[in-house]
Amino acid sequence: MRIVIDTNVLISAIFWAGKPKQLLNKVRRGEVTFLTSEDLLSEFKEVLMRKDKPFKLSSEEAERVVTEMRGIAQIIHPNSQVIVCKDERDNKVLECAIDGGAEHVISGDLHLLGLKSFKGVKVISVMDFLR
Image (cartoon, rainbow, N blue to C red):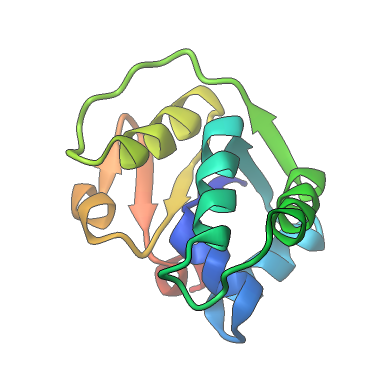
C-alpha cells in the first residue's frame, strides 16, 4: 500500500506516542510505502524549526529528522499541478499522492479530510487508516 503522510501526522508521530507513531512504525517495518517529495520534506523541516512551535529544533537537528524520513520514504518528483485547496501546501500533498500512485493521503488537516477523495486517492485520518 502506497501512502502520503501529511506533515501534521509526521510531526505527531515523531514527538508523541499514539496512532501517528503506530503508522510511522508500519512504515519502518515495511508494511506500507511512505511517499513524499522534496517540497513536503522542506515544509516538514520548516515546521520542525519554527519558533512558534514547541519543538524549535535547530537546523542541524531538523535536518537529522528529515534525513531519517528520507531514508524510509520513496521520494516522488511530482509533475502534476493541483489547485484544489486554498493552502498551496495541501495541493503539494495531493500532487505527491497522484504522481506517486498513492492509495491514501493520511492527514489531520480538516481541509484535506473534507475532500474525502481526490482523483482516486482517499484522504483519511490516521485512526481510519489503522482500522
